[in-house]
Length: 383
Ligand SMILES: [Zn+2]
Image (cartoon, rainbow, N blue to C red; front, side, top):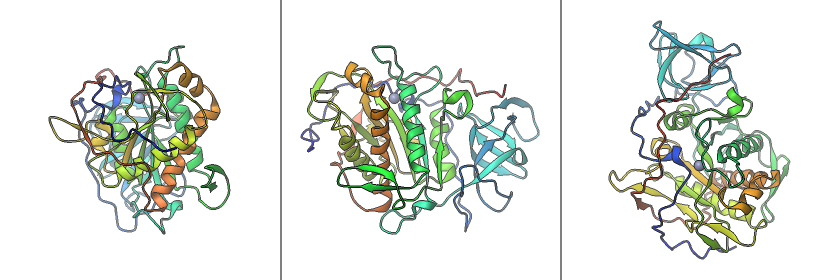
């Protein structure tokens, strides 16, 4: 369905629930970047183990039994991190790895104590892109004490985001045929499984995925593993008008080339995915492909996008605050449609040079949408 309101620049202060993705947090460390080793390849599984020294370490996966986090190599043990936690690697010092914990604190682990995933080298997108070598980070927004948007019946945005992220991960790690005329996604061989789909929160991970995670942690996971894309899954709040079209907005990273094209394709496929579900959508009027630039600094307003070195988007699928959309989000068929919309948009981004929805120019933004501190953030501890 054609979008008729893309050119309407709204200055309505969106009372976004996405407090964890604001640009206002200044407490988190900037990330360090490592250079891919020549010949480094993507992991063949989601938990590849490699010999130390042969690659550039990208991620450190905590093994069963947990891993000790140190304040510096061979220094004080801070805690034992929960098995399954994914720690983006910042630096290598002999047999030690500097990593970022889930609260965005730089800490150290022994390389021999973790499973190391090598940093991948992103491919050029377009015709000839090898999906089977692609690596993506899926970020389920919010978590732990940060619920995101509350639904009118007591639901939590963070729970919906987590389930949708899991569904997206499952799509990314299996092969499919896609009927582009209808949008139908089914098992097949046309689009192979990706090499990796790394999750910032995951129902099979620590605390069943319900833990607080810092913005730097989330973005650095994509940077450290050399992701072809960073996809942040969110839903929205603050409806104030009736819309003809689905209220989805997809924010792109101004600072990373091609993020806008990624956003435009995901938005186009999300709108297609949601078109069948409701007649009278409620929303804020901020729809389609959008970007926000901090009015003071001129950089990406959203901290996640500002920190990303990979093409990155924040997807605001539906409005948790709207009773009808909350009911839709409570159905697996709607959450699956959300995941399939993102999946199709990503596939088009990686394998074609197409654009989707009209790409809006970045909007100067000086709003305050809240910014929870990670001061009291707790890294999941091995029981
Ligand atoms: Zn959110």
